[in-house]
Length: 345
Image (cartoon, rainbow, N blue to C red):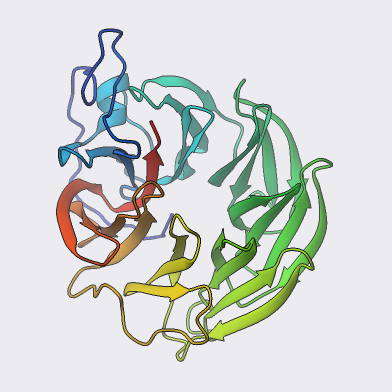
């Protein structure tokens, strides 16, 4: 959730439940290409309860907006923070509504709700019986059972946690309000170590050599941003690429399907190969007058999806590009699009 509170006229459309996308006779959706169904999470305005989901069919270039509301006859809630596909379900983290909606990926009908959360941010599935949920205000990671939707424990973190990555029996966690990556042993649910990185780590990915890359914004004009490379065998920093200005605020680190090319937002879209020795000074995709607010790379074909918040009030846009930055399509979404999930079947 970005804390942008905008007063605007808002109303909910009363919609009849309908199926989304091409249907089989059993009522579930089918798609001809793996990775063809893209979930676009739209934050909505803080406090207005107008979070939404847009589903985009990349083969037909067709779009369905307000999918959760249309399929479940109820509004999704306040501020959609993130979505994650895990074990055939879509886990939709609704930050200011303190919950995670669990949806069927075939038709986006609710299967249940995970409650008892304070200000959830990201969901990380570990096994059919264990998942971690990071949190803004609770000073802990909540442990949930993703199959029964029950809260089963917690890990005290002493601060705001954001994105998480699983490698081996370890979970690497961004502790955003500091300059740390926490390392949690998920077999014991204990923090076993931490790694010092740049100020305000916000996103992280693994490369093809299982190195961990962490993007640090530097805070609000506090420190120079950094892109940090960590060896996961020694849990030590092996390289730090430092940005040139504290006014920059890079976010949304992603990696392509080969895990050899990193992408991130810094007004425009930038790319960084894992063997590069310097940061690029020129955007791979220029933002022009757009407000680039979210980034996703389709792991099945490497198409690039960039979200444009426009003015944080009207319906947003998502721009789809080929891997070489050639534009393919422009998608109209809900308010403040920023998150992407790619459904593999």
